[in-house]
Image 1 (spheres, rainbow, N blue to C red):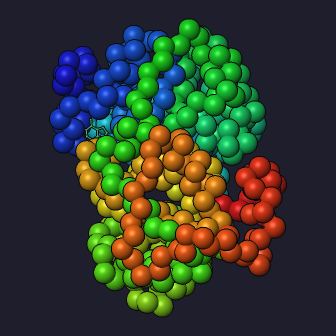
Image 2 (image 1 turned 45 degrees about the vertical axis):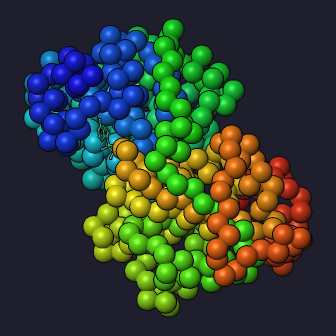
Length: 411
Ligand code: AMP
């Protein structure tokens, strides 16, 4: 199948061709015809599968015949709700790229940035609005956003919105949109709460899915390093010195861990930047741009800050700490091996993280091959090292850790 077979407007096809997309990805092949037909869609797909174009192209296609309203009279006709600022910016960029040859206008609004410039752009009139839930509701409350003309509502990364506690906001937003609308919901995983959200907000939806695991696993080589916790930094330095080349993202579970590793790598003269929840939006965008422009080749990040971000040309993912939620592993390694490129995912596992490893391997349905040839092997009989600060947390296990994480935002 080619993009031409999807009966999209020539202006869109031209922009797509300029991106060197030759064939639609599986999620695009399945989703675009449904969206063009006005059908509600539940899409089970993660970032990296081409899902943004899967909804952006048919939405633009629908809006092109309405594109010529005078700028100030433009009404918001498509609303994309995204959990994070970074993802919102990325979706906005995609819409802008695909609508290069149209008069359609897209903007994004998100927290952590001054409102005035966002309000200015909104007042000038946009066709497509990408927004994080909090800022959207805030501006709506101030009567600065009119959602009465929404034709298509997209809920992107719905499971992440659930994890971040945005579900009630999402429901409020849906209520503010006309009931006669098309609704698309995308989620990497489909926990029961997302199923019931979809039942509540979508009208006779069609389901499309691309397997998260197989799409991630095909082109990614996964390696497991069993290593004592205090030796992880040395192992990381050893691998950086001797083995790893290219653009690398290193995941840590906490902001503290991110900062600590950054300090060590900077001392060792590596070009590094970080992304985590304590950084201002401007600092996070700057870090991401430095990485995209190859000014730094190592980015250290926490999960939530990095999820959904599309970083082209990512060669290696290092799970310096294993994620305590198994789906996190799939999200993290999905950062590499995009669009058929080869990628590598290295995971460091200390004795106390073995329960997490078990959950991850159960989820992906296979054992991650153990890399034994490294200088800091873990004694197979090693008991979990009790970390002074975090010992009690680890002992209490996953549930209490998850509830703690909810109480205190540590990402
Ligand atoms: P997404 O899942 O939307 O974040 O997209 C992941 C990456 O795939 C982005 O860098 C897109 O530019 C790229 N992409 C999207 N569709 C295609 C396609 N049909 N062919 C090649 N690359 C694509």
